[in-house]
Length: 489
Length: 95
Image (cartoon, rainbow over all chains, first blue to last red; front, side, top):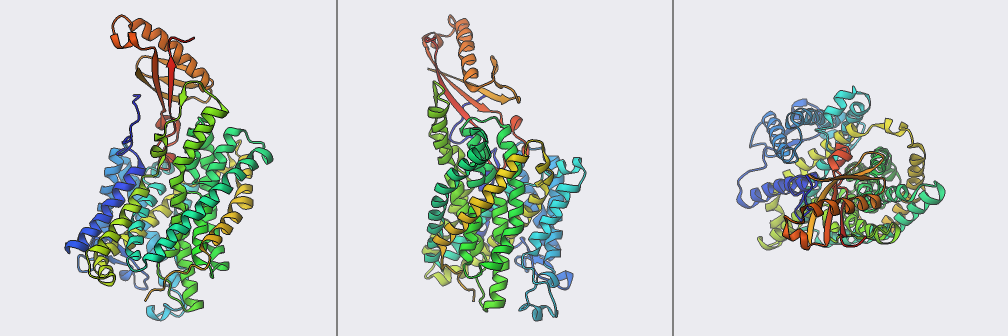
């Protein structure tokens, strides 16, 4: 029943906090492994390109266990660790076990099919796999997972769709993965510190510039062109210009809108984010190979959910690195384009609390002037995305350890590889695949046919195509121009 | 000053605030706040002789949190942790 909200409210009962706990837990396993030599991460399943099926996956540390044992261990450990979160969040644990199990094995299936060498190998890889043709579809496993998810989300019987959604949690999975991505940034920054800081600051600056343009333009378009009420226009403007569903909910709460408003807008956001996820990486890879980091950053500014943005960034990373290897003869280090996409998104996410506070202040004291109501500064903290704390904690820990416990950065990088690589590489990628499958499952294109959504969908598509994407591309380019990913040895 | 907390729902037509003792509703939040004030005057008036703290209290802090789980679909919870948490101050000795 009704209770006063405290600073620690939700610490064990929200997905956001559980992304922090789980992500940090896995990163700590990696750090302990690197520092102590006790292998706590060798069980993590690692998928790779294959021609013979027995080479499709193996343990991250193959000496630790067989491929099948690694696959089963990964299933059990991921099931149990996420179930701990589900238990504290008071979900139906039995149903979660069943739903997560299906999502897990579908993701494994998508990963294996998508990594088949005839699908995924680049022209440069073909000799390595003894094949003379391939589709060169880097990141095909992500698309495969998305397609499987979309088929279920749109064509499976309703009862099954509702059941499986309990284990398909795209935002939760991607936030766990983003904490691990923080470890990757810290790990790579040990040898490319200046570049990593440049990326972080450029992303922050681009985000502030985008914020100042996106929201007022989107709000004005909603009000003047599409005649939306203030309530609808404000929630739409936040959803489309800030961080999607999260921003729509935060804004609706801040301006005390009826809950139906952000719920309907959220249905649109999720569908449009998937359309962007399918279209934008291909377009950017085809036309913007000379500005890969700007292209990545533009995704963070234009794709409006964390899951879809990171997913699009992962595809773009694969596509651009394949093209660079093939056409430029350059072997770009994996992950920098993805990190650029996630970096701008994280900065956007962090501002949502401040923006909600500003909007609440304007609405309560100016627009609606309800006597006696006070806006609390704590709103900034309550709405702050806690998984971002995990991202920066993981990065900071890796840098602290890398710069202080080893004689030089080369030694540090090498020593940390043992524990960190399986977490920031194999496990993070698997959480990405879980995210892709889940995005597909929760995306129901029939939402567009809902009564009353027509004008809203039109407004959303117009603002996205005419304001958000062009300005997002321009701002990303202005703040990231000329930045190229470091090359791998 | 005492603090009283409510869960809030929106049933599609009205805002509804409720706790163990009071349930009130209003089409707008301003109307809801007014109903809460009326209700508190009655409820606290009845208790006046029993609770010394209340007898002295002319100002009440009222907190209201939207019942996220009953108003927002399950799939949305993962995106943002809560909806709104309002705090209003009611002077019981003023009309």
